[in-house]
Amino acid sequence: MKGDANLPVENSPVFTEAMNGIGKQFVNAKYDEFLRKKSINEVDVPLATDVAINLIEATSKTAKLVPIPTGVGGPIDAFFIGSSGAARRLR
Image (cartoon, rainbow, N blue to C red; front, side, top):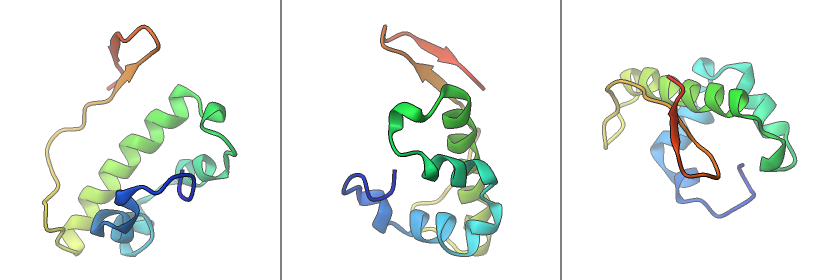
């Protein structure tokens, strides 16, 4: 979560524009719910999935308004990788 670690993504154009700038209009309420969690242990798989997919979609929509140097696009594939290491397709 923002502020929990020094993540390079927080300074990237994607983070700046998609999550805090003009793209905020495309981020749904699940992102705010995610940010209110005090620990990653409080985030369940459905919430994590919704947030991840929404942020990808928001970034893609934002890139149509503000060009992002690295480009954004393509299909969205979501997988859950549990403690066993096995991947399960969510979307």
